[in-house]
Image (cartoon, rainbow, N blue to C red):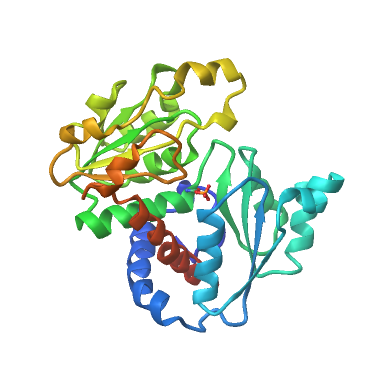
Length: 304
Ligand code: CP
């Protein structure tokens, strides 16, 4: 694989490139503290057509720690896309003239790929509909490796909304590059897309599907919980049927292996009881910080 340009999908990466991103992220741990001016003359634009706290702010923090500058509209309503109906293509053809790289989050599947078709500067997908969130998967892998020392050899449970959750789609695909056992745990209506299960199985990893929280969290090294994505349901009644049904409570903690870790891309609603925060299993706020160093690595590899 040549130099990284766009990052739209996990499929844009091979195992070697992912390993290089994780290694570069490790190197970024000290740079994140000391700061550098490596991207001192570079500008990153953030185009967030959907709400975000972590992805947008960690990208901004990453760019600033590398000496770069950031710009972006405050919210979609105050942009010409939201306020005046400008097309995504025209927005991209405008913003590429203001910035050296564009980080985009958009509610439509395929949006980041469309943006890349119209852009002369690199595009990073910060979440495209319910399709993918590749930089989240990379920071998830980084978190697992940092905490457990390895990814290969682990058993990992992906839990919650596997149908509409874009983080688990990207993470499932990324895990296909590793020697892992994966449990897919979701309510029956929110199971993982068959194409992704097929991809994981084809890669040789063992995949098991379960539909109870107890089965999901027992006997695994990593529990990766996700929020039920209310905003993606076409029918609110369908959401009401699953709301609150897939939760890890304080009582469930006893089912975890002693050294099991619990991750979550956040935000959470009610699927992880706050009492879990005070246990040694809870690593989701450490995972948040992995977003800074991993995104520093991605920016450095694309722009450096
Ligand atoms: N994990 C994640 O994408 O969080 P935000 O929606 O806050 O960016």
